[in-house]
Length: 360
Ligand code: SF4
Image (cartoon, rainbow, N blue to C red; front, side, top):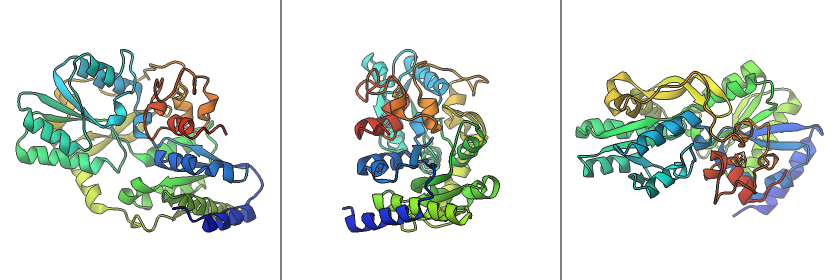
């Protein structure tokens, strides 16, 4: 239940601190984008405070070559694909996983990688491949599924890792001349794992402030206020608004589980390109659980593959375009018939703008 009195007070404070020039604040996380749309915060804030969405939806940032690669594997019919529902309708050149399933290919929607593990155990003559797409929040539980598979002696379970790391993407945005961000609304969920420290470079090296935010409208407004206060004082810093959800040092146990199984590698992001050490692959000692190694799938290609030429998802993930500036938005591209992943995923920016009819 929104505390209307608090919201009114927060908006007055924002108005009081308003520097009356264009301020671009990027909400990095797709969950924040949806919370902002649902509560109508964009319309409530002063017009010069521009909330722009960033690369915080894991399905959206998954590059086309990875999508083509797992779709090819699925269509070979050699494996059961286990996936979160969000990837089901992401289109490739020959349709999506949902289309493949319609053609009789075995695709199973799971709610956790441990469920995929059970699927493998129950189908000992089949190979089960779990599609791992997610940020630092998701990797520990995927790592635990690999450790558990090893413990149980399962030989028919593997992970197709598309995992990505948030800090390198923020660095890439700030190196990009097209991108214009004054401060960051940082992701609460990712930060519960990585803590505050990995963002320090934002203020130290780039002079940009960041506040780790919770997901209620009051949290987001307080965060905007904290960022404006930093700007007015000329003291960019990394602060936490989401104290109730995280410890400043993050979760070391979860990080250790992830680091035991995964190691950083260069990864290609939609919109951002090939970023050094921004993805995760399975360590050599867990290679038998690595679907890319097990099935001889291609490694990161030197050049980008572009499957949906009319889709502006890449620019939207960098915050240089808003969804309604894509000519397909709401016409050729809707959640019922999505053209690009930013409309498919429940965390996607285009899906949020469509759902909450946002045109600013
Ligand atoms: Fe891509 Fe559709 Fe978003 Fe346009 S509206 S950028 S086509 S996902």
